[in-house]
Length: 159
Length: 159
Image (cartoon, rainbow over all chains, first blue to last red; front, top):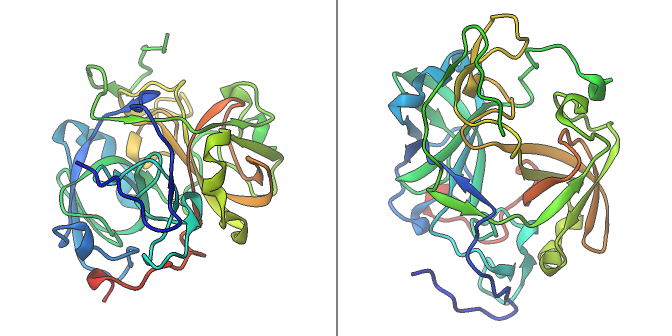
């Protein structure tokens, strides 16, 4: 059960269940951090190796990803509450808007990291730069937008 | 109804409905592009101004975001099919794995962009750098990870 207490200065919305769109988990992320207190606040590109275990049926979708040294990873921070408008990360009464933080506590608790892709072993990706709990569900993998050149010709909006 | 035809070399999975986690849309993105064919393939920081209309109840969660010149935007590309393992973006028979592309066609069609935050007007954010269709649902706003310094002290995993 998610904690629903509020610290000084924090504000929450009274929300019903979310239901505008549904996600499908496509794998599991293995990291050295067993719980949220142990995680780094932000991933570091020289941090420990982590293993992204893509569900095997998605393995053909990796074709070509090994060309990228840096990839974007999206994952589901399902342990976090989703109703806070303002938060006090230091628990000292100083509050910030949820959108001014990269805290897992947000209306849609999706983590995004740019990670260093070390190698691909079957359907597993070995990376550095993650910050999430061991067992975090995987949502998506994309090439780093800074390295990626679209494979198809420009469209009218590109001009 | 989403198109389910396959072009040469494309592969799809036979998937049931997604249901591992649920999203709540928190606003709507207004852009100059009425449909997918009109959108740029990638947002450009000198592209046209776009307006992110945050739902008003979330406005307090913007507190402090105006300190960032660059923010990350997550949005739902709900027009895209979700079952393709490999895709041919040029429609020329040359195929790539879905995860080696930044195409909207992916198991969880979430777009992520780093945009330039020009100004905040009430619950609206005026930005440059988006690439999505007018009316796209908003999922999240975060400070640019490269500019953001965590507001709370390091945790064990940071050391």
